[in-house]
Image: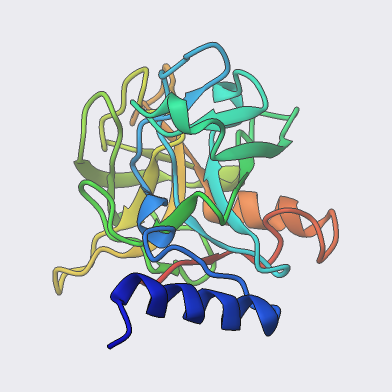
Length: 230
């Protein structure tokens, strides 16, 4: 009778002889799940912003979008798990932030699994045209005020002014269109700022973001952004 330990030793030797690697089954479980609406942790422990939509680009990279003014250092960490080391890095930060307040983060596929299901919103597609019409009902999620909804009052220049409340800490958080049939999964923009306008809550549209990324070519980080559907 062959002892169990000897049998496993023989299997390991055979695998090694074939040039195969033995990968622990727990490896995939060690990845953290990153979603829209996640609290940002970057730089020197700064956790003041929110992650927007997550998905893939033309090159198959795992990417996320947030507000450019949230940038606090290249490295991005999973909140509460800095011992894992950086799970991603800022690949692009827009310097023009009046109409293009966005940044692109590229995540490490060895450490991250993306999900369409955030704490309050599911995002699995981009709104057709990337700019919600005036009068549309939109909803956002953010680490400070959570999910809030309101009508779009204007969308001039690709900036969305809405009654969906946002406050400091919500910056970068995702905005979706809320349909009459109850669906609300179409990405429309990210939280940008509060202004002395009516409505006062300002969002950078998906149109402005994706159009600007496209100017840097098909291989640029974030080019061809497609929200994850899992």
